[in-house]
Structure formats: structure tokens, C-alpha cells
Length: 395
Ligand SMILES: Cc1cc2nc3c(=O)[nH]c(=O)nc-3n(C[C@H](O)[C@H](O)[C@H](O)COP(=O)(O)O)c2cc1C
Image (cartoon, rainbow, N blue to C red):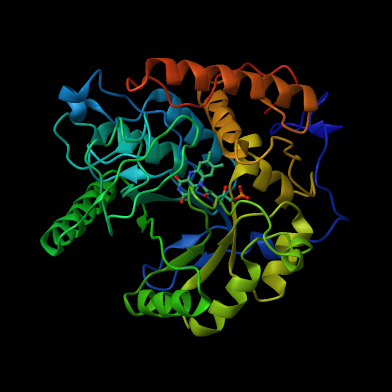
């Protein structure tokens, strides 16, 4: 029998879990002092950025500055994670421009013309209410924004993303000029300043870099010189979503990028290294820390399924995350549905370790994708289909 956050047993919860033999989790509860800001993360857990798509949106192309204001659902979601004993909470990608967005419903903070900062303050207060650090992930989609929302995409080069993904088409980008890059850097700075005013503890630029270890090592050393507190090593692009194991050797160790982390960590003297992607059991997490691969454990999808997972792992109530049987690549979108269920304060969250629940979701996703296609290029939803949990658990 599983238990909810208040210790009450919840029937039917935790249908199938990635379990391991019980291990001491004290090492995960250790605080991390961030070397340059001096801020302290209360434990080694980090909630990975997951685009929530729960902000206000414009009716048409003429009022795009109405986009991006946090809703009460978004604030609810962060209040739950705030209660979940997570050392560092990273927000889903926050856009630095109104006209360059990853999706309908994105957060945007590039000015304060409508006093939106008040909403962002509420958001950070909810995330930080129990001592978590709250960090914004600053983002520009480059070539990875749907053409209907980003009619004139700009990017590092003019190479187009030639795929069709979850009802999205991507336009041919124009390569930015050097003055435009400088202007964009200024925009990142402006957004970082507004985030500071809104109560965030820091910002994390969403950086895409080559996947060769030498390139990544070089970049991480440069970032340390620039006094970056931590690097969160994760991965995945629209073309090659890396949210699964690519190598047999990493499977047993859970984290997809653990070998990559081991090549980088020796080059960092102060900057902390966090690895995100694939962690599912307390043993996998404890071994990664004890083995010296990383300083912290980043978790994405399992925290959409269970906002209190870290707390329950630390308390020894569970030894691992719920299984997720939604097939890739839709597997990320189904986590989006869970984010909305939590935000909307549904009593239960869908359990993707239940095959029937997965089938209900796959059907809802198909219907939503067809509906989206039928009104295209109008876009009126996040693309995360809304279902009420039948096989779910209370939290
Ligand atoms: C719904 C969803 C949204 C995501 N949005 C973002 C994002 O906004 N920025 C980002 O860098 N990664 C994003 N990711 C990737 C996650 O941060 C993480 O790297 C990935 O889910 C692998 O970790 P996991 O195996 O613990 O889920 C997203 C993942 C999911 C499932």
C-alpha cells in the first residue's frame, strides 16, 4: 500500500514502480552549496525544466504582448512541487521574446508592460515556500518553433528542421547577424533582471551545444570561468529526442548521460554538475553520487507523475518512480497532460503504468492532434490532451 503526502494510505496508487532494494538515501539529502552565488540547495534533487504551456495567450497575431502571463494553474503546479522537498526547481522554458516561442501557453517575461511581474512573483513564492531554490530557464526556440506561431524564425544558421512533430511544422530560419546576436544577448540579460525582480534565485540559459565530449568539456570549463554555479547536463532535440537509452552500458546505471558526466566532471573545480534524464530508482541515484559522476540528480517525467516523489524517496516510502508505458516520442506529451492535471487541481494524476490509462491517453492525443490539424494554422491549445484520470492516484 502506498501513502500520500499526508501519510494516508491511497488505494490503487503506484500500480507498477521501478523498484530496487532499499538503500540509505542520506547522501541525496545532503545540501549543495553553490560555489559562486553562495546559495544553498537543501538537497541534491533538481526538478528538470518541463514546458508547462499554462500561460495566457493572445487571440491573434496583433496582440502578442498579451501572451505569457502565468495562470493560477501554473502557480498551483509550482506550489505542489514546492511542497515536494526538491533542492532546485527549474521552471519550464521561459521565452525572452513574444514573437519567438516554443509553444502555445509558454511563459514570457521580456518586459513588464501589464504588470505581469506580480504573477511571476506569486509563482516564485509558491515554488520557494518550503525552501527550494527556484530558477528560470531562459529560452529562444531558434528553428524549433512552430511556423504558425513563429512566421519569421531566426536561428544560429539557416538550416531548417525538416520534421513534422505533434502537429508542428518548422519554417526555414534566417541566420542571425552579429548585431542581432548582440541584441538577443541583451534580451536575455533583461529577462534575467526581471526574473531577479520576480524572486527567482537565478536563471539557466537553455544552451544547445555539440554532443562531442571535447566540445562539451571546453564549454563547461568556459562556463566555470564565467562563474556559473552549476551545469545541468541533459539532452535531446526535436530530431533526436534523447529521452531514452542510446547505449547498453548506461542502462544499468539509469542516467542516459552518466558516462558523459564522468568525462566532464574532472575538468570542473567549483562548478557543480547535475545530470538529468533516466534516473528512476533511489539506488541508481545514490550510486551516481557515491560513484562521483555528479553532484546532483535531475528528474523530469517522474515528477510530472508524482510531484512528491523526491520527498517520498528521501523518507524511504518508495524506492523508485512509477513506470511509464506511453511509447516514445509521445511519452513527453503525456507528461504534459499530467502537468495540467496537477495545475487544474484534479484529485488524481493519470498513471502511465496502467495500460488502460495509456490507451485512453493515446486516443485523446490522436483526437487532439487531428483537431489541431483541422484548424491549422490557427493554434488554440497547448497540444497536451486533457483527460481525467481513471487509473490514477491521489497526491
Ligand atoms: C513535458 C516535458 C517538457 C519538457 N520541456 C523542457 C524544457 O522546457 N526545457 C528543457 O531543457 N527540457 C525540457 N524537457 C526535457 C526534460 O528537462 C528532461 O531532460 C527529460 O525529460 C529527461 O529526464 P527524465 O528522464 O527524468 O524525464 C521536457 C520534458 C518533458 C517530459
